[in-house]
Image (tube, rainbow, N blue to C red; front, side, top):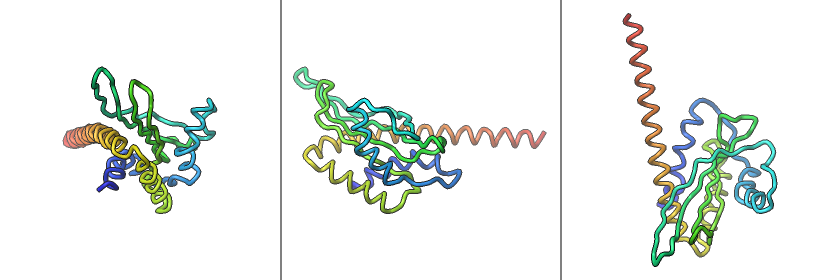
Length: 180
C-alpha cells in the first residue's frame, strides 16, 4: 500500500510527457544530484548543475494552528529536464518538509525517476524513500507527503480532463469540416 502512495500519483505527471516517443531514463548521476547534490548546491549558493534545469510544480500540504503556533507538513515538486531534451522530464525532485513557524524541522529530498528508467534506478529510489522517511519523522512526513500528492493528483486529473475536452472538440470540428 505504501508503495502505491509513492509511485501511483506521480505516474500521471510522466504519462503525457512520454506518450510521444522514447526518452532516456533517469541516470544514477541524476538520482545523486536530486537526493544529495541539490541540497549542497542550495546551502552553498552554487550554480545549477550544468546541462539541466528545473520547472517548479509548486508545493502542497497542510498546516495547523494550535495555541497560536502554526505547524506545516508539505511536499514540493520540481521537474528536472536535460537541456539537450527540454520537452521530456528526466526526473522529479520531491522535497518533503515538516516545520513550525516557517522553520523546517525535517527536510528530505527524493528522486522520482521517469517511466523509462531501469529497474535498478526504480529500486534505488524506492529504497532511498523508505530508508529516509522511516528515520524518526515517518508519520508526520508521510502525512504531508500523502496530502500533498493527493492535491497534485487532483490538479493533474483536472488538467487531463481539460486535454480530453480539447481533443474531443477538435475531433468534432474536423468532422464538421469534412461534412461541409
